[in-house]
Image (tube, rainbow, N blue to C red; front, side, top):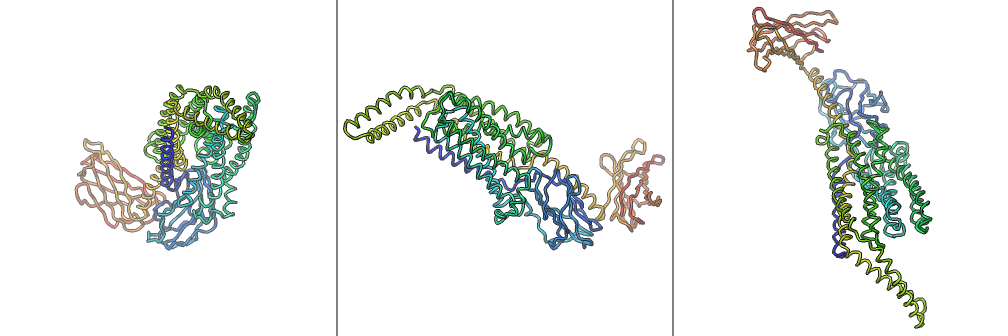
Length: 633
């Protein structure tokens, strides 16, 4: 039965790893965690006079480099001068050359958000009138390409290493202390340490290129590495490496001196290792919390400790699950049912902590129920919640198998005297025949191998243990996919930020569209009126084209509240520039059709904030005047 399962195990693990690799490779560049919420000049606007500087406003603080903000003319030539600077708050700017000629200009930006993720983008504005431009902005992304993929892989491996290291050590120390002398368990925890250390070094090397040029050749640029060490993310990675040095000492004691102590002597050492291991594990978890989502935004002082608890709960549960899987499949020493039950209790507490911290994190990162379905972060979070629910369901099945698990340790202990007798007889036989101690040792090894094989067959024949192995394997498979989704989730823009960015972009687009309309020759004013009669309510719309100094075309439309044309006897318009004491300039438009009046060559003497007053008469005695101010010229 065991021989049949082994190929299935390998195939399942390979398929799961392939699925996770596909998920990571299709994740694409890391989404912007600091969103562009405003700019001056605004996106798409046409300005009469070239600006002295270009400024951009983000949803949170960002880090700048010398090339973070660039302004390119229609031919692609840079026209900014000097280094980018902080204007104030979350607004950053760069000076541009004076006297820019008319045309369309492209603003590109690449910065690093406060939660360590690169942010890139571009937009255009025009001076005088729009023009064709040779600048392409479609490729302006951050964290993409080969370097981006490698960085994402490094993040995945760092999470995996942390989970195996912390969870495996916690499983041995808290659930199965006999596992400290089991070679596969030692290899598992040491492998987690090596994975986390290697991944951290890789991330440190990749960081400069990942947040900058994205070129593979810049990975080993020492100047970039020096700049990275001065950033918050670089400091977090260096802190992680220092803590891993302490973790190496912890591992050497756990699998060295601790394993050699007697049970009574282990008690004090267990307490010391538990305290030290908890401190080191919390420090490792904090190296993520201090540099990523939890460190910025709403309630950061609460979010960071919560994030540490969340990561420790994940590691204790999933890392312990991995250790249990190794104990069930790879360990020659059978794991006692009591150890499995202890882990089941620990896992239950970890799940409870995950639920509590996860609810808080979801509220903090989403902000609304709609963000679950309308943002990529929310959609990924739903997938994660579904995987956690599936994992809990399988864990419930594992708990049922654990309750029925037959302990094989007693049977093995009963066989111990028999083994000793066999070994003694083998030793005596070797001496009587003159073979000496070498022959006796060889026979003893053969007998031990036979006993071990027999014990494995007996252990694997236990249907409860077989069921537990299958359910734990299924848990581990779901956990691998869950880890991949979590890694992608940490690289995705939080739903709250995405929704705020959408709102700001919509407001900016509306404002810039209005400005663009004013600049390019269109001004529309809508005013509701009520003359007080039985049929006196409606809406009057006044259009000016091109809404500039000099001659303009004016159209007036009168409609009923239901949108149908309103047939009224008379409409008059008056323009007043109160700041300059000009007006009122009376305009009597000509009737063109039902509800439509027009006047040509309406002269606007100067630019300013003009008051447009419209008098509407709906009968011989019912009329009213409504007005609205607008910038004309």
